[in-house]
Image (tube, rainbow, N blue to C red; front, side, top):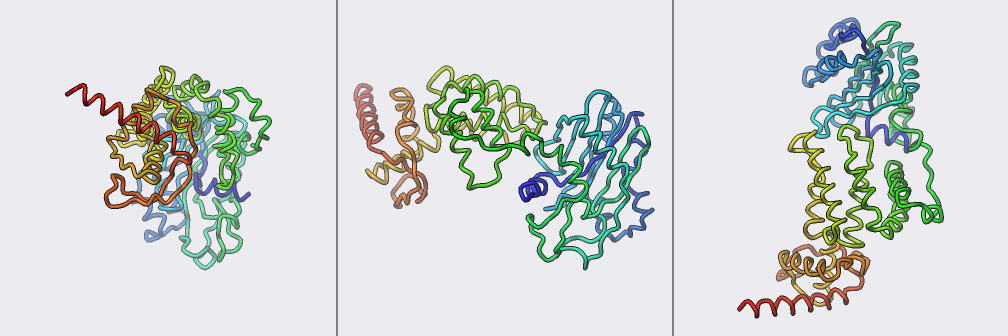
Length: 425
């Protein structure tokens, strides 16, 4: 229950909406003025002030729905519970499909567009259409720092009719003890309870860790899928199942590349809950840093090209300021965390003071002579004991546990560099 509430509150805290079919706004007042006036909400109440300072995409969405066309819908608009950004959620269905849209004002990730099961949509519509508006609680009845009054709007439409209502904090979550309102003490409100089957899939809700023997006997694709499931489930930072799956994926190494490329190329920027392309990128980075450098082989370079396509697709959908996989691409094309751990270990043990440019040249040498060099040693946290004369300034970080082989390679690299200089002169 605690995990469920934490996921709800951090990830969404949303509302549902039905609507449409007649190329209109289902009879909804998208300014909510008539609804506020009907409920005697004064001009100085927080919800009215919030409405004036935020902008809704709902009218534009209604125009889009005319082309679908939608036969029923639910619209929810409310302030996000950490910084009051306008959160707009639309659930709608056509004759054959149902979808969940969500947009948070000011966010960089664009609009979420997720397909939902028709039975889940029908269940929510049937329930919402029977609700009566809850009365708002007074300030003394609410948790500390909670805003009194109404906290959002819900509109619904189905073939039987349509309606709109104001939402209160209790619609989202209920705090039995207003002086102790931590996530573990909260109860879900009726909106969150109704949305649970959509926000948390049955697969995620019922996920259980597989024993190591099962993971060891999986195919490469099955292990990648297990990593994706674990990522969607992961909430406990003391949970080491992720590391266990990584151990076998790194043993798979380049065998994972074809499936990773497939997942990256299948990325849909609007499906924010589908983490498969993100996980595929992280698996590729893990192999690059712990097994073999991607750019050392034709197959690995194909993975890098897939990452570039993924980055371009994300930025094209979300705009030039979007966060894609640009930083990951820099690591696979240049020096990564393992390379820095090598440089730090050579400084700590042998006082070799490599600059960033020399480290990159050393890495290129290793890729040509021993592309599997990331697998030579694991890393550990250490006090690096940098001085003012060292090229890098950080004093703590990871170092390779067994630096001798890297030291020997560095000496060979320096001899090669010296001989090249001699020939050029």
